[in-house]
Amino acid sequence: MAEVQPFQEHNLTLRQRNKLTMTGVTEILSFDDSAVVLQTALGQLTVHGQQLQLKTLSVENGQVDVDGQVHALVYEATAKSGGFWHRLLG
Image (cartoon, rainbow, N blue to C red; front, top):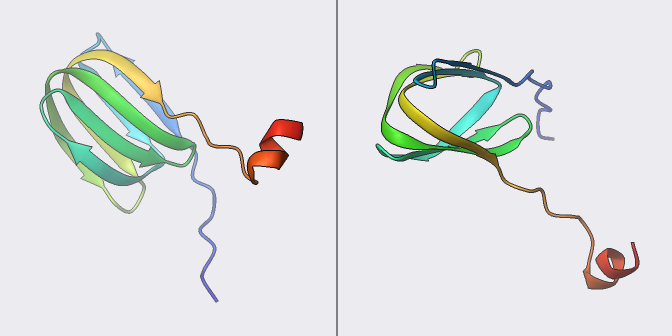
């Protein structure tokens, strides 16, 4: 049986649009100097910007720090569960 992970609190702190600190990060999906894609306790998050750099990655507490000019923080919409008819008829 798979072990159930406790819910991690997810927080963001953005300072002067160039220092972003996040908690509740479960996985880094991809990163380059213009985008960082992360899986968080509350869904997938994409950080768009310029000259982005991962500064801190703490696996134990799910903390990630990103430096660089942040332009946007975008959460991926969660897909509804169920089949076509369930989504159609709600």
